Amino acid sequence: MHTESIVDGPGIRLSIYVQGCPHHCPGCHNPETHDPAGGYKAGLGEVTALLDRHSDGLNGVTISGGEPFEQAAPLAVLAAEILKRGLDLVLYSGYTFEELFSKSKSNRDIRFLLEAGRLLVDGPFILDEQDLDLAYRGSRNQRLIDLPVSLRSCEAVEWELAGSFDSGSQAQGFSLAP
Ligand code: SF4
Image (tube, rainbow, N blue to C red; front, side, top):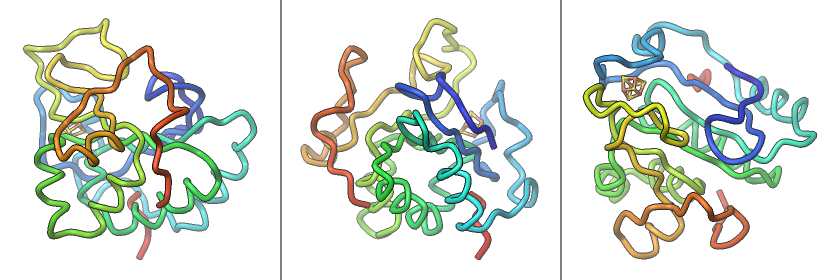
């Protein structure tokens, strides 16, 4: 878990790396997060205490991995705590927006997580499309998805890099120990 970051989304962010990822992208920069049995368990209280300790000057929280949407239920609870503190939420996923949107129709935790998020960096890392100049992502296939706008229009709408998080947010809503 990292406590401060300026590379995982706009502003100063707390980055949380969840454990377990089914995508196994060749060239992944976080291979130690792949094993779902690895890492350590953290209780919700432990994570919210961390949020409160680092709240000064913090713009938001980024949940990355690993694959966050494999742990949608506990992360939905955490997302609610993040939004309650007035912080924005950026999510990373090896799934595309279209795949997650489809899953969200039968999984309310995934739906909640998408609704809680401001930005989704989507899709697997593809080594052949690696580009070190991209903001917040590693390969050209990955997109910065404006979640509130995309959910309203039921299709992926990319976020304008020059934009801010000030408008359009519909804020409402690790391995966390059960
Ligand atoms: S989705 Fe992310 S964490 Fe998972 S293998 Fe791909 S790059 Fe690594």
